[in-house]
Image (cartoon, rainbow, N blue to C red; front, side):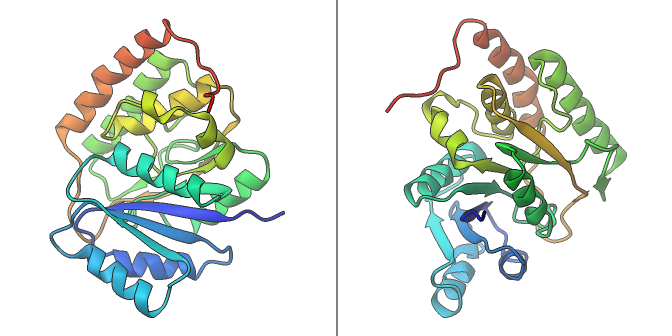
Length: 247
């Protein structure tokens, strides 16, 4: 069995990384299409993508341009809707900065072939596998995942992971209008929704390497959103029933 696969990559000022990343993904043993969602990068990331589209990857490289920074969550939901419209079987999320090793896309693909409805590239499934982060940030991330597990009850080691693969049936089942977070807490909310619906979630150990080029998009506000937003999300879940959406 083989699946049609799409890798969704949101970008903002990633000119140092984007061409190298695209070429690495297209060199893998498993065929992947790519969808870049660029939020008006001033450094002309989108122009690099357009050039590659027009010269080498006309059928497999896709680009959606948005007028400005509209949030990570809205970028992925835009990508999910595009993927479902184009009938992809597997839909992947990954960062543009090489913090996720492109080779690990194959691991997530294989996990999906073996029954995972949501495969997560996990930094914390087998210890702490993070490279180039200061200790303070490692501890903050690790204990943030522990906090989310405590509040939500999810048995997921890396609750904030952004390297994932969804089977299309999962995204067809979710009601995107009910997903409220736009920042990095979006990753938690999506996992919570998938877990609440009873899908099979599998964590695959990966090594996460902090970016070497470009600038980080992380901020204190991101962690505040996750801290208070997760608590609110769990409380609200007591007053609703998770059901498969109807068309």
